[in-house]
Image 1: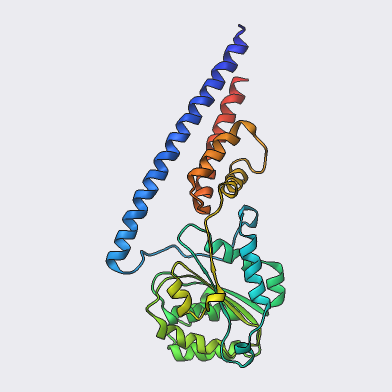
Image 2: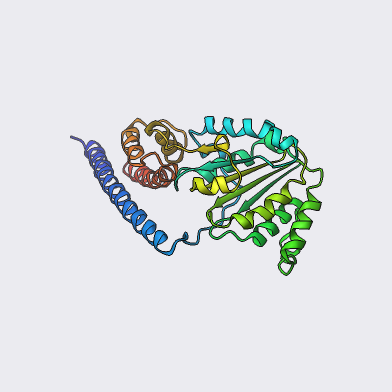
Length: 299
């Protein structure tokens, strides 16, 4: 056997060992994730409110989203449709996306928010990350900043204003305006009285205005004003959909038969969670780059 053939055999053996190692690492990650989830849920239940969470934004890489076409279509139908209550000026229809952590509630809301037809349909689209405890003054300031397109400096000037001033400013800003407001990551279902003040202010907008809420708790969705028909429950992705996410991130759309087997095994370990598919897809991508570097060096 030539030296060249021996080198090729050695390279393939390294790849096999690396595949075995990455499988073990993924098993360890999944196991640790399960332990962490149980611990975090226990702590959350003990202190009766969620841990501080990172702030979300409206920006998203649409090309990396997968498996939510039906949910998107359902939400868009709600956005375009009307209701008797709305025509009577009693309420602004509120649609809620509900599901456990990691299912992609925020990603779906980002997908809707950035849809070109949505931006054309509404006079103004506003994104507000609520998270943690519901602070009506903080939410009101964020809404004003989005409505009036204020810079950080001008928005900072709102800090000292009382709630009444903020609510009046919102009602004045949305007079005759058809707006779309996204309230992302709403947690606190015990603050219904705080939400009512804001909710009453929103009715001054033009007919056709809509509110979209994301939350883990169906109780919060109902508190925010969503009827049963206006709640979208997110289900887990199929293994095939998880594989599509992993493939897109790890292989960047390329077909690679050598890595498809391990990629599909990884997809099964995601348990239907898009966030897990993205995380493990990124890990596989890093290993793929490493392998290709080793093969290049041998050749």
